[in-house]
Length: 422
Image 1 (cartoon, rainbow, N blue to C red):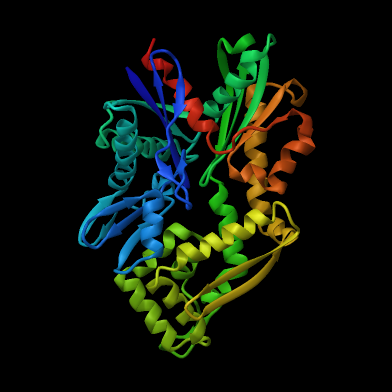
Image 2 (tube, helix red, strand yellow; image 1 turned 180 degrees about the horizontal axis):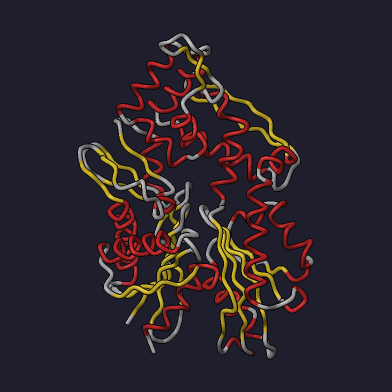
């Protein structure tokens, strides 16, 4: 018998397999840009007009080399708690959020089944501590994710909070070799959410107890978005004004400009009615060239490349004090310098929310800072200096455990599949 642990993430997805002998293996279900097999797959979809759907690195390549109009979707997980997103039409076919996620989970299942040589219908699926602070919306999001997993071909599905899974991975490598009880604070930073848990492990990792969990809807995408909005959106009409029919000057419509903050919402600007509105605004704008830039961004599917350049600048700021957002496609040429201090000023509200969620987890656990033995951080956002400083200033750097930032959750989900073998 086999069971999968699946980390369906906002940015990346991964899968582990566990057999009855207890061994957990991370499966390589995709490849990186150089063609080398990879244990993570980008959680993206690309629809060709013919109806063919591509996934992961293949989807990204098809999109970047697009010869015929297609549809590229990213950060789909962030739509799970959305009450306003019901469905979207892609080349004449209507897809719900359940349909879209089921496509990705089915692809992961097919690839994993091929690698181990049999069909597996049991899975532990990761989920954030909270999709939403509203319990009804949180329940709706989990129900959608469950429906997607069942539609993908799984029959037995169990959910595990992602920071708890990361903590299990930590315990497997740390507490399992310790003869002392360990209290571990886990911070799991994803693309759309950040979650915290305080977990107590018994000696030698023989058992554990979750003392508390807390989560907030702030993730890596939000840090990208704050750079996009404050440094780049101005090139695409954010501050443009246009003359209304009555002669008054009006600000650029917020329902359009707000989508510049979020990569996964930019493709929605291609909807016929919205695209029509943008064209009309361009005719009466005080800076028609900037609106034309937005039209080129939309019509030529350049948003993905733009956000990649934004993300690269963000990552560089973890090592240097100043980085340049460089974007050059068609006749769109942007060279925008951003300093680490600017970035930290832009993102201070996000960091404050992370600190509040961390405080909630510690308070709910009923432990003091000195009673926490180890701090285990996972996810790319944990490498951002201003985020890391939250933990270093409070607990000291010596208690922070360095592990794989991108596969700890999925490994812990694989360990969690022991529920199917009891």
